[in-house]
Structure formats: C-alpha cells, structure tokens
Image 1 (cartoon, rainbow, N blue to C red):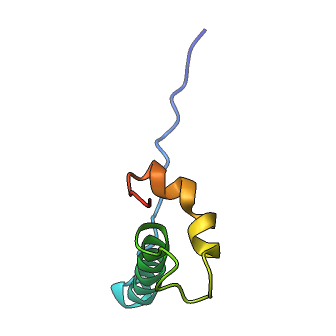
Image 2 (cartoon, rainbow, N blue to C red):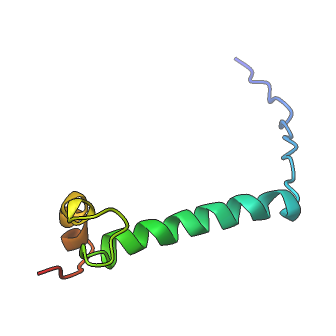
Length: 70
C-alpha cells in the first residue's frame, strides 16, 4: 500500500483593525467593572435599587470570590 501525502492547507486569518475592536473592549470592560462592583462592594447601602435584593442575588458568588459580606 502506498500512501500519498496531501499538500498542507493554508488558512488566511482575517485581521481585525484596532479601531473596530476598541469600542467592544471598552464596553465589556465597563460591563465587567459594573459586575465586579455589584459582587464585591454592594452591601445594599449604596445600591441603585432600594433594599438588599442585589446583595442577596450575588451573596454566594461573593463568598466564592473571597469577599466578606457579614
């Protein structure tokens, strides 16, 4: 049996200009900062909605990340 080797396939990867990537990076950076605030710092006293609803929603995640909340 003889084996034939196929020519390697070349794949052209598209390039993404930085000007198109920057707005998305900024958006997700701000979104991540907002999520980090709600998980780490929000104790209900500075919460945007009244009460402790956000604190209760992120309570287990806060302990998982090592933030004390009591």
